[in-house]
Length: 491
Ligand SMILES: [Zn+2]
Image (cartoon, rainbow, N blue to C red):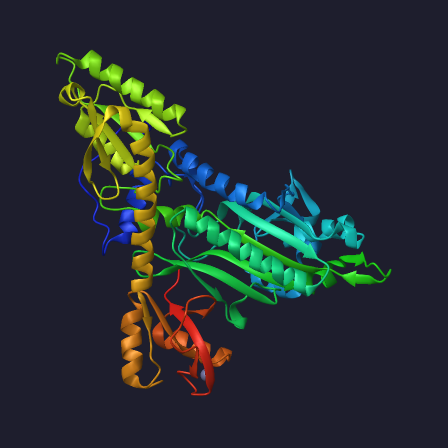
């Protein structure tokens, strides 16, 4: 194994202790090594990278139905990056600059992409000529760089985001671009459902939208410490970037029109959410669809014991059968004691363990142990593949159900009857420490900022889907007409 030190085999409490739990899990399950000597920059371990790759293979397969994958350069010339005024205002404090080539100062400094609009759109201008070139839908999965000054955290707040999936689309008109926003939303819903990660979708307040966008939709999930984490965003850019970068097409009638654009992104926070939401005091709990190892087979034999050869043979046969059926299986026939093996594979979140000992073999059976609820079941050897498939599906949906219940149980809905009263504020302040609160707020930035200050939380925005008892009421701050918004302490 990667780590040579003997690990302490104590459990890791998660409740009330999330931050420490998170760092320990990344290390013990070998997801990410945080010892790289640059702040906010980390190393993927092989096991973590396999998990990351399975998750991104799912994302790719969803994207590939409608988009084409591309790869743009990491370096962006300063004059291009500075072109879009709103956009650069949003990013300039976070840009890393390359200013020298060897010992020579560069004529034009180069930015390490903080995001790729200004790398891609000058090329869109060249690629798009006619209405026949539209819609143009591309994506790439790349690293991006942001000089984060806040406390950095592996997979969550990074100076090098290693796995940024960014999609960029161009359309003939706003109707088509808005349709694309809905498509992107459906893709993201599908994606996070496969990860068993529950989410809320909101339209971010105007003061918090993506710099340069008309509006921003965001996916947030709830972390175990009661804070929300943004795990995906979708932006309707409208014509703003098209005007800046002069991206026009010739319409059917020969006139020149600006394209209408969207962009949307997901980072390795999707991996962070899978780890954080499902894990427990014994380690990771991975949904079968993303688990690098779905089933581990452990022979219960001790070298001195008779019948060990038969047990090992039976385990090897089960392993082959599962692999043939397309299940990612592993046969752990190492010299370690079974207890040490249990500990390791529980820590790594393997959804299902199959144990076979001499007594099981005499009964032509084996034992299934589920990672998510520790339940054990005796299974006849002849049914092993069929039962493994069924159990993995069951685990996938149980994990989903549990996670989703937790999220929605932690949304507190203010009735808005005593809007703005001190008493209501005290209740909301208490509730927002545990999760999300839903309340009435008008569109003004002043009310939003005032509320954020009083609750020490962020306005996530107006929910897109969830059915609300009442969607219109009085602003909690100024009492004017308002809509429901979600508020939470956010990562
Ligand atoms: Zn107001």
